[in-house]
Length: 566
Image 1 (cartoon, rainbow, N blue to C red):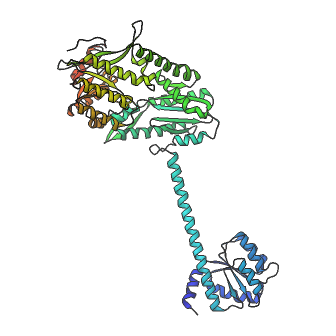
Image 2 (cartoon, one colour):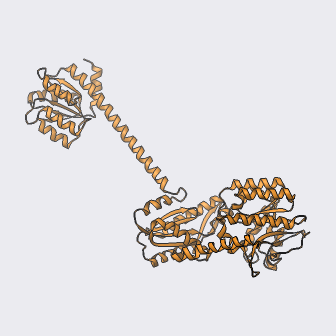
């Protein structure tokens, strides 16, 4: 007798649930006494029917059954068991004179047999082997369960990450598109945070991120579970409503958002100092529309709202057709004809320096047949996605070079991100600079645009131009890429402070402080500062007081077609 094996069985048997089925009372009593020496829990059935009922209502790890029993034989019991559970361990009690039943039992997938009457060594060996199999199965099941729990948890994490914005923890655009599929028609409010780029540029991206998180939290609280709130893109959020089908209800919701955002400041702690950031929003409403075109309609309404300086606009066909497309069509026709008839001309506005020198900014104008001068405000946006935009830029470059060729006068040309991205324009510009030997005359003003998405392209362009001897100015400083960290990387020769700051430096203390900060920072980097939008003596005096190097605006000179050159 192997005592070590017996001790192992007793130890392992403490967690094993056993059902023993035997109709013979004497054999049952004798075998049960032995089983209880090895297992803590042994349940008993007096025939196959009782055993099957117990199995249906309880959980067992091991079934030990006799073969010959009334009502339901052991073979029938095993057959029923295997139909409901392939894994449960089954041992049969078999006499030497029962070979036919034994073969049937093997075919049904028993795990072993015990000789009757019990032979202790054979009993110990069979029980030991069966317990090892039971324990391995339990460990495998536990591992599978643990693995499934891990997979389920990771799946939930991935799903959350996929459908949520990592910064604000709001559902993202993918979640919005998923949720919209549940309904044929929806109403959405597209909420655009006004001038958010200025917050990033003035305070830096970390403060911008904290501001977005605060806005997201505020919008979530404001909706009060009446709507679903999503972060749609960088500085845009969406309210999605399945119930807000009434237009007036949508308008009231939008009005509440606009007024609440504008009447409250967002307080953010930065280096132990509290910043009070003012927020305003423009909202486009698309009401009760088919969801396939909701985003398209919302973009149209938002663009219209910004062009017309409205806080809230409801999408309508009038906006999409008459206002949106017709202006672009008219702009394309205007520019196309002006280029063909050579009526695109450069005008020149003086930039007066403190040392007495004057440079000129070249500004595109179209002259009508009646002699009326048309500003780019009325046509430039409408042609940006057409071939005429690049053609207009090349004509302006060529005419400016022709006018200033042979002089010592410096002139500046405006280049947008679209221009810099166009290899043909940049190649044309380089060829003219080299062919006419005019690098010393040229200043390239890089115009701010929210469409800039490749800072490295801008930096590479500036480096190339500086190698040629061309000077660089950053226009409209105070928005877009023109924050302080980028200023150090781009290393321009000039910055032109945005007119929205300059025009109020004599009356608005915040504008004055920001302008002063920019001017002082630029001086430390040996960058000349030019103030745009000098429209009065008071503004001119304030700008000079700040030590600014150059001044431009209608107070000092309007754009004109003909100038006196050196």
